[in-house]
Length: 112
Length: 111
Image (cartoon, rainbow over all chains, first blue to last red; front, side, top):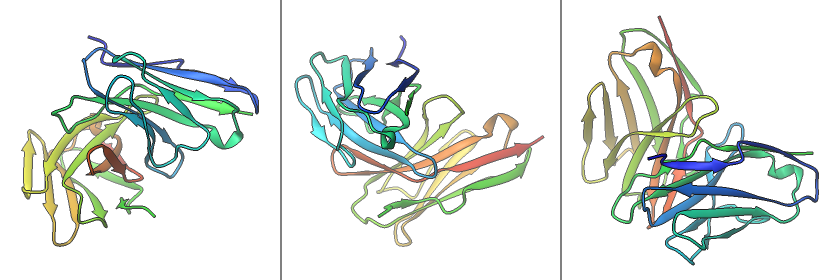
């Protein structure tokens, strides 16, 4: 039981490049989330999903897209990376009847 | 506008003493509160939570207190141990899905 895993752990991009961050969970959770954490700030919600095939915008969705084609996976895409997207990205999941979100180890992204 | 605030960026405590971490919130609609602990290069891990219908929840060395009238919660760790050294985030649940996080307090427990 790995919990929530994230791929990759670290990535360097040039401005304008695209990439996809992968989140996978093996807890059969319905809800999944993508957050970003920046220095001096708490975690901020980018997008979330309440089930397979559904997505919704969070607090800071601009510049990101997401997809939830399978229940266990939640993908975060950056179509054209900008230096302002340099951050640490965390994925989380929770069960439908639970309040607690469980987090992955994070992906550190540097956009030059 | 930050709806959940942790005004102390850091706290140092001697091993064996009590650590008290504070958190304030502005939205009276928040109905559930959580504390997460984060070590460097790892994701946040759930520590303890409290529903808005309670004023105290205890789990071993960790106790969370909620004062709804003051919109304030605190996390007490007693006795503090060096392994407790980490960044602690307070979070509040608003609506069905969103968690709003504070900026974190870095706790250092000195042996």
